[in-house]
Amino acid sequence: MISKLHKSSLKETFFPAFSQCRAKTLALFEGIDEATFCSQAHPDFSPIGWHLGHIAYTESLWLLERSAGLPCLFPRYRKLFAADGLPKKERVKLPNLEEIRYYLDTVREKVLHYLEVADVEQQERLWRFILQHESQHSEIISFVLELSKQHRGQGDKQTRRQEEIFSLVCPPPHDLSEMIQIPAGEFEMGDDSVDALDNEQPVHRVYLETYRIDRYPVTCAQYRVFMAAGGYQNPRWWSKAGWEWLQTEQVTQPLYWCENPMWDHHPVCGVSWYEAQAYSRFVGKRLPTEAEWEKAASWDAQANCRRIYPWGNEEPTLKHCNHDNFIGKTTPVDAFSIGQSFYGLYDALGNVWEWTGSWFDSYPGFQSYPYIGYSQVYFDQQHRVLKGGSWATRPWALRCSFRNWYHPCIRQILAGFRCAAD
Picture 1: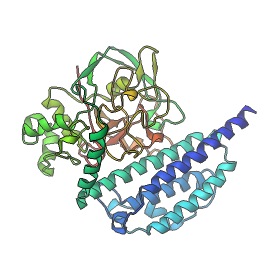
Picture 2 (picture 1 turned 180 degrees about the horizontal axis):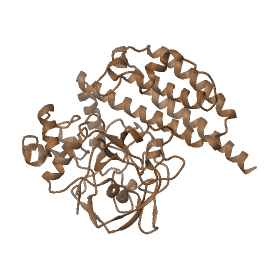
Picture 3 (picture 1 turned 120 degrees about the vertical axis):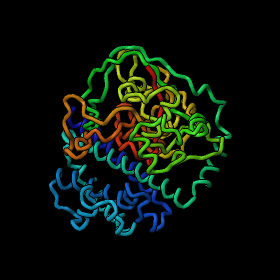
Picture 4 (picture 1 turned 135 degrees about the horizontal axis):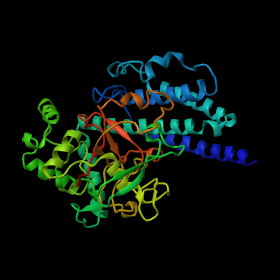
């Protein structure tokens, strides 16, 4: 009886979750023209139309073919939309939006029929993985659209709209340079829940010495000091690899930079790991390790336990943090006091991803799921860990243990950082 109730409860969870997630994904395509749908905004990222097709492909592959045992519904799309099918530059020859919508809708109809009879107790982790997979690609679509706006010079109109909003609602800023001290001791890192992706598992205890970490992410006003002091021209602050990258790229400011002081208390956004490291050196600090970031964000020292979110285990809403494309841009770093952690860390989830000083690697006892290519192939000492999520991160992929990873040269993602010190 309990098992039947649990199955029913899971199905009642998945039906609305899959529907809500899909509606949010499709909303990003409202008013999209064909050029934006099919073109690459940057060589490192596929067209947004490809991501839409890939969502359908992945859902079909895992839930219909491998779980339900059904034949591939659209074999002609297998090479086009598989992650390992074509190089990114060859993903521009796409069916139009209407055709890909038909693909999505047909797959989803079959998936919902299968959900009625599926053994969701046994498959729960897979269904949650698919939900998070769409959430992650929805976020990629969001920042690729930001890149497209940059190329078309459409950022200014959006910027003015956001300035008008925040000039009305923002309270006077706190001391945004404040650091908090995290005392020495053990904490639990990772997540063993059914939601957790393979790279978050297993939970393990980590001992850290006392350290300090910025209460807030680095703001545009703070970063402007680095720029004004010639930070992009002085090799003193850059690692060897970072300086070589800078000489090649010839950048002089973050990708999503705006000079207007109305953005001073927003987190800097669109920086590479190299830029984050250089700024940290400039102010006499460093980037936090992944463990330092996670302890400050998730550990409740009084209760001696992990929290799913900085504020506790209540699912995120707009009162907690800037996420889920609710606002569509960054917000001031002190805007969500309800969302702070036990130690007082602000803005740990949402707003901007935060670079850490750690390489992406496995935890002791790691087991790949649902396939080796999801995480394991990236344990190559070439990818840095980012934590926390952004303003475009869906709630299904938002938690303190969640791990994102990119090459240190990437600045197109919605990334900022905060600093730490011994």
